[in-house]
Length: 89
Image 1 (cartoon, rainbow, N blue to C red):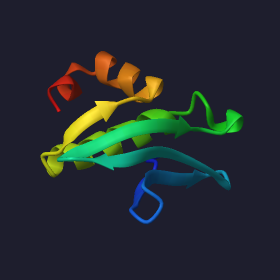
Image 2: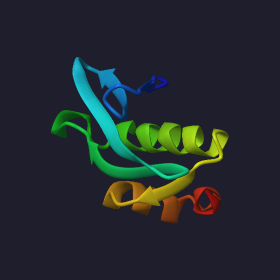
Image 3: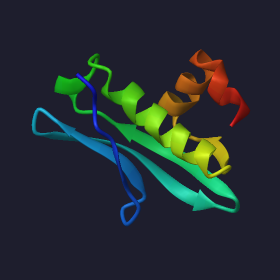
């Protein structure tokens, strides 16, 4: 089952609702890019690919817009390290 992630520009986050619960990656705008500052996945959704789907969507967005990426969030930083494709973003 694919996890649908939406970009909520007003709240500065990428988010999804699964099993009635909200999960998100929060960012702040920086010159020429985005600083991913926090990832929140409810306990019940952990281990189901939600965090990875959020990270992938957020990084794809930044890549598509040719934006600089800063990963202040440890989860996003770890995702980038594990998926070397994103290390060039």
